[in-house]
Image 1 (cartoon, rainbow, N blue to C red):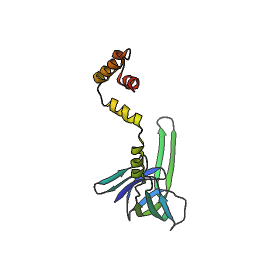
Image 2 (image 1 turned 45 degrees about the vertical axis):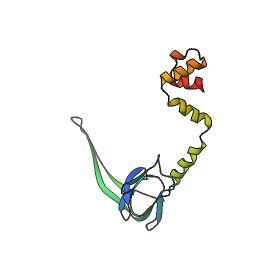
Image 3 (image 1 turned 135 degrees about the vertical axis):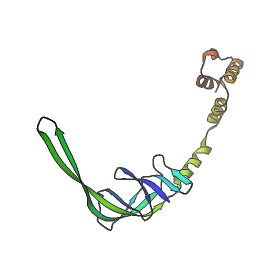
Image 4 (image 1 turned 90 degrees about the vertical axis):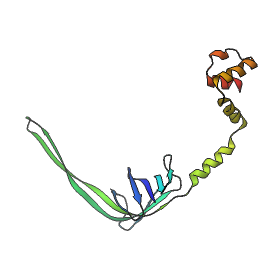
Length: 161
């Protein structure tokens, strides 16, 4: 099982027992941290995608150590001007080890609850939306709606409902 999680502003693909270097996190070595901004989880062919994050999903991790990254040299030069600047940078990093990925399906159940709440008006509009423009114009002609020949589909549905 794997997950794509946002940690300290960056996205990482993580799996259980994996070690990841991230930007410096607050906390001491040995502390447990959990990340709730899980964007995607995958387990074989079963993939769960969040919009933008999966509700109830957590990635548990443990801070292994704090360290500094390799030195990056930044050299700037403008030719024929005598301008040269050399700077170096070492990023502060934290090594974390992923202890577990847990997924709770709260998102899927909330989507199922919203479906039965559709009112009768929406269902009648959906029935009208399934018709073609020509069929809607015939219905408007039968009901005596004026100017039906120049109306668009959405206007016809609104006039008929």
